[in-house]
Image (cartoon, rainbow, N blue to C red; front, side, top):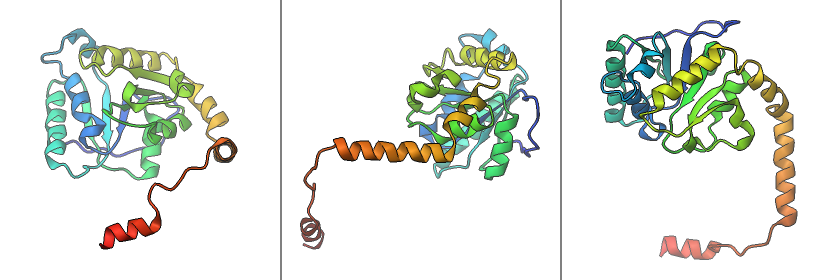
Length: 222
């Protein structure tokens, strides 16, 4: 795969998306790349709209070598069509990833299964919106700061092209940063967690232990 070196954050966003996730089946890199192929696309005109877009897959192989090789092979196929430029950048340091977020139009996650991934909030701090699937399970509070797609591979190029066009037109400009300034301050987050714990402590019910300690020991030892 092609190499990539991060650079300093830019005042204006590059025609660039970043896919920040370990390379493994649950993160959906293969499904995403297949959806970007012009050959066999149900909406080839939508793929054409993505011409010149660079997508950086920022994540190391998570042990499944067969899957990782499939990602590399699909990356080459997409690049051979000479419409998009896909780069597998391996795992990046935090500072490098932050620079990449700041330079990108948006962050992409195409997970098959996920739960409110941290990468979305890291990107919001750099005023970078998101393009994710419903299975990322983002809370309603943040869904207006990006696109939550249905994961349909046939519609992926069109939905992604609409997202890129909206980003380039400045549709999300300033929204993510304002949200982060208000909601993603460490002291505020900690306060909300403590308040939630207090509420659960006062309103919750006492439950019996599922397994007593002596039962666990007897089961293990004999």
